[in-house]
Length: 633
Ligand code: COA
Ligand code: AMP
Image (cartoon, rainbow, N blue to C red; front, top):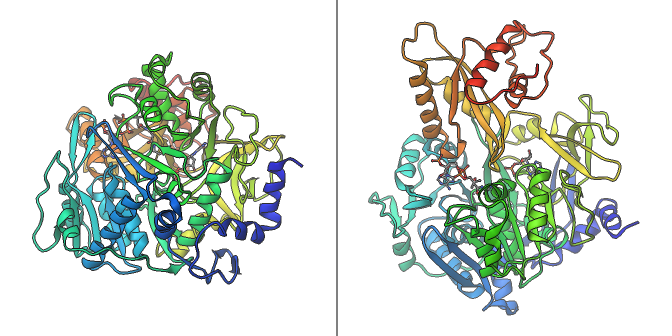
């Protein structure tokens, strides 16, 4: 057996011993009673009885262990024109002081704190300060509009919200405070305090009695020590898109999370203490939680926090500049960022200006890596390019080339092999296991490894129904794919209404709810169509109510604006067409997959149960009008 095979088999066959060894790399205030509590399937808990503090393990442990003066976090913002480095000691002190401020403002262990912030170091400081107190953070991505923030406030019920005066996007400053105020107005639950970081680009007005300036909160605070919590206590809740407009609150525990992330740095990302790791994502996504904040710090690395874009800040050489300047060893981003660079600088001319001698590997995730992008990156950078598949729910990679164990040959288009800890299967509709090469539903045999979601926030029934009911004994991933004869996994598409736009996970169901709320709309469908840059883009098709006299153009413009206001700019719904009717089966099911195939110019067969085949021609014409549809029906 190869080294990878040995490690992989051991992770499943000697599961408890394998994970106990991984856990031994962290500092525990009290050891666990059992590695895995499997007394209540399908619900499992890792390291019950164990006590630890995630912030201690991410910061204090390294300060005490000789890394006090090593850079812990480098903030690099071409948008703000700032580069600032924090040593482990400086970051620990900043976090301890902000934790003291949170406590002074009433935050206690177990309380929730919503963090709605741009990519500034204070976002990471706020997250780690919550971890220090044993408070549960829930970070909301800055590209979400007020109603989305309100939904998360109502679900998480935070005692306090941490925010900033503004975020920076190329060419515009986004005032966060009015969005925060609007969200609190919309939400039923009201936090008692908001701490607001004033950025120099824009001043926020504070509401007396509720809002506290970040600096003022620090001025009256004393540093707080780490609070020891149970390994099974929640560290954070991160909301992610489901099939409806209600986001799902993925819960992450302390113990399993810390163990799994250190494991992933060794096994998957092959990055050791003292080395520089950069994930160009956002703290609002799971990649940002895991690989901007927690994993690099738990591993004693230097993490880079980048407030900028792959192109336009100032050019398509921005990534190479950051890699060279901070001597990044391991770089992680979404394939869409590479497609954006390739579009602007196809020959990679800008790369020639930089010394990338410290750079050893590129990791891509968040959406399928198309073979063209992989090959382009391989040829240009001359380092391994590693696709890795995972999800918010899992928290760390489940399929990857495990370079820390054994580097496998790359097959562009496949995310490679199962990561130790994950027993992945391909199942048919009835739950039968499919042979190599046959496409089916990806499912992971329970128990899931440490670090994966133990439940949904305040919604165990939702957790069971969404993920565990379809195939008893398995977790349903929501993706379709297959495994080949060599054990390589090919993840092809979602099996639900989730789409992936520029590496951002979005729900077409949520967008349909917004369109359907417009007074002129009778019914609607949103489909994800293929896009060369962003992977997918949402397109809306709406049927207007009888008697609507306003022009379709006006209504479509309002619908685009409505999605921007209700969900946020990140939804990127820019195209809507009015159609006379939607194609449906005789039982009334809207044929979204067929419309998607038409839009993508893929071949399709009209289902035998279609109500009226002519509707497909009408849809093809409408999509054609939007610039899509090679219609090969
Ligand atoms: N706060 C406020 N608005 C935001 C935002 C934030 N944090 N992030 C994005 N937006 C806005 C953008 O300004 C844009 O607004 P616009 O419609 O007015 O132009 C909109 O949301 C869509 O953003 P995005 O999908 O990011 O598109 P883009 O055209 O700005 O950039 C890429 C395209 C490919 C350069 C960009 O998506 C990118 O760098 N992606 C990397 C992938 C990534 O980070 N994935 C995260 C998971 S790993
Ligand atoms: P998120 O929860 O935002 O990380 O999105 C998870 C979803 O993104 C997965 O269920 C997949 O549909 C998709 N995805 C993420 N990474 C990959 C990948 N490497 N290959 C294919 N799809 C991916």
